[in-house]
Structure formats: structure tokens, C-alpha cells
Length: 236
Image 1: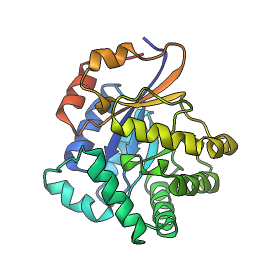
Image 2 (image 1 turned 180 degrees about the vertical axis):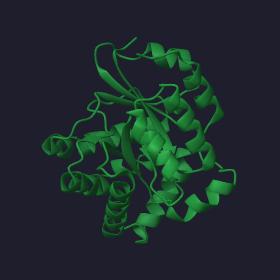
Image 3 (image 1 turned 60 degrees about the vertical axis):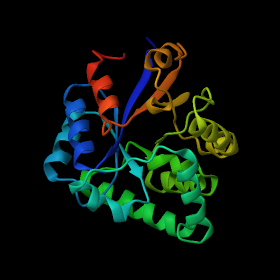
Image 4 (image 1 turned 90 degrees about the horizontal axis):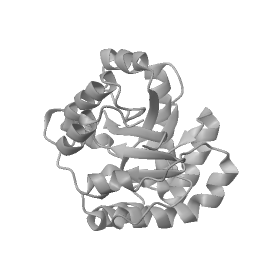
């Protein structure tokens, strides 16, 4: 297997199930990075467990503040359609609900809360549904990384295969952001892939490029992805 594989577990804090499943995987030594959605629902016990684990703790920037409390006690409906999610995202941006200024203020607050809760700056930065790839937001994240001295960003220096519509969109956005990324001197994996981009898990793993670093994104809130990840003895 590729020696540069980085396993990232997304959406810690988005729901009770997501947090519980991620902590189980952390205890088993199955993940390298945990992507944390900052909210008041993260308990001191969970913070202690994450800090003691030694895994990298990244801030998972989001615009789902109004939903996090609800999802703690209710089953979360996960939307998989790229077209519908993209339409909602663009409409909110066009109508000024998620302007760059508003988003930057919100994300700065989330990083400040991360520092307050964990007693340190995040080891890296990513975002819920990859919205930091949107060029105006990407420049915003670069400014915040510089301000808070965050060194790692989920990006991927090279385009992945076009596994699905989301991968194609991110590949296109990556090209748009590449110049700014190189100017930032931030660290990122050579490739970034999400395990839910294909149902052919064996084919997916076999296509990993040897001798490069690859960040593979898992969503342990999903039963299939939790079971697959839990079943690996160790990817590295």
C-alpha cells in the first residue's frame, strides 16, 4: 500500500452518531486526522479524548450553525446530489446570505472557538462539503491560515481522477485556486480523495498512486464507511 496515505474522519460534532463513531475509530488507531465542526455540543470529555489520541485535529469550517443542535438529537438526512447542493450554495451566495465578509467573520469565530476549546490552534483546516474550494472562500481561508498560523490545508496539489460530479467540480476549482495555494506556502497532500466518490472500494484503493501522499476522506457517520474503515487492520 501507499506509505503516504492520510486517513481523515470528517464531521466530528455534526451529530451524536458522527462523534461517537469517530471516537471509536480514533481509539482503534484507524485515523490520522479528525475534522472538527466547532459547536457547543463538543463535551470536555470528548476534547480530552481527542487531545490524548495524538491524531491531528483540524477545524472543519462550516455554515451549518443552525442545524448542529437539531442533528444531535435527530437522524441527519445526508444529501448526496451534487446538483442540488450546488444550486443551494450558489443561490445563498448570490443573495448575499453567505457573502465573503459574513463567511470570513463566521469562520474566524470558529477558529477562535477551536483555540478556546482545545487550547491550541488547529493542526489544519478543511470545510464541510468542500466549500472552501470556492475561490472567494479559498482566499478567505488562506488569510485565516496566515492569521492563526495554521500550516495544513485540505486541497491536494494535483487533480484526482474524475470519479464523480463532485470530483470533477473540485478538480476544476483546484486549478482556479492553484496559484494562490502555491503562493501561500501551506502544506497539503499530493492528492485528496473522498471514499464516497465511488462504490467500488477495491478498485478505488488499487488506483492509489504509489510513493505520493494521499488524503482519503471518510464520513464515519455513514454506516458503510464506518464499517469499511473499522475493518482495515491498518492502511499504512
